[in-house]
Every structure is written in C-alpha cells, then in structure tokens.
Length: 223
Image 1 (tube, one colour):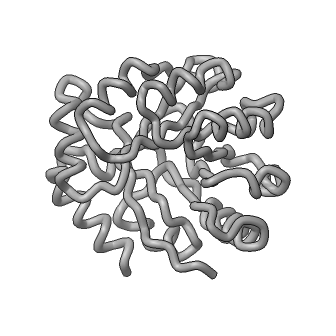
Image 2: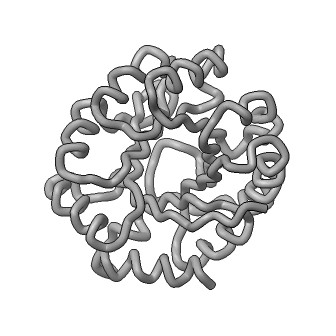
Image 3: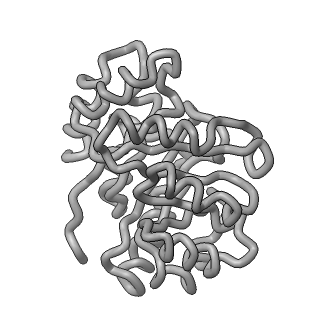
C-alpha cells in the first residue's frame, strides 16, 4: 500500500461569504493543502451555491489548488467553464453522468485533474470500470446538498472497501471523503484509507479561529 500524506481541504460552503477573501486567506495561513468548492444547481441537489464566476474570484486571491466538486445535472456542459475559471481538479458525481467515461475523458483533455464522487447509497462497484482513468475518488459521507450534516457511520467501512479497490486498480489514486468530518472522527477516516479530507463546519465555526481549528484537525488526523 502506498503511504500518502493527509491533505486538509477546507470547504468554503460553510465560510462567511460576506468576508470570503478573509476566510480563504485564514485557511491558507492555517495550513490548508487545497480548497474545496461545492457547486450546486438546485436540480441534482436541493440547494444552489455558485458558478464559475465565484471560482474565478477565489482563484485570484489564493495560490492553493482549487478542488471543485460539481454536484450538478449534466456537468459536461460546464466543465470547460470551470477549468477556464481556475479549477485545478474537477469532481463529477457518478450519478449525474449518463456517459461517465466520456465526461472523465473530456476533463482530462482540458488538462485538469479529474475525480468521481459517489453518494452514500451508491455501491463502490460503480467505480470499478472508471477507476483506471481518474485521479481521485470522493466518497460522500453525508447526502450532498448542505453543510453541517452528521457523518454517516457506515462510511468508514465504505472507505476501507474503496481503498482496497483503488489499490487493486489504480494505486496512485487519491481517496477523498466529504461530510461531517471533525476532530472526533478524522483519525477513523484516515485509518480507513482516506488521504484528502474535506472539512467545513469543523474549520469555519465560532468555537475557535480557523488556524486553531486547522491545527486541531491536523493533530487529530495524526493520532
């Protein structure tokens, strides 16, 4: 098994959008490895967030890699716009793509890292045929659409099984997890094989500064 460094990816979904630039700079100063941007269209998920213009604005204020998660219907129509806006990686939902391999191929041709996400009820076997062609798999540990949800406990077993499948078919592929990660469970998901950890409300909250919260998460991940 390849040993991978753990990367923390603060999600701006739970940041204060009235001071977004400050929130992003705080995460960068606090040791974030990348930023996670959740794009929602109100069709694939019951919420609407933002589009390429916000991604472009974020790109202009940080050097961190931008990990853009497209929770949208028919993502093929927009992948070029998000790459042009500054995305370093684009993750699409397996459930939203009629021709998943074609979508993955298109993102690769645009020179962007590509990931595929699966919802909590989607079986990992869905990924078997596409795994050799992607840079990252994202296991959703909550139902997509809203921040601040509680971690679905069966996700740890799913992460272990996904990592095993990745080691078999694409050992260099990153395993990302998103939803309900905090200082109490981050060590569990890392122990199950996840190496890219999306953290939202555990970073942006009133209980501590962004830097303190990031440091606590990093320490807990190393347990």
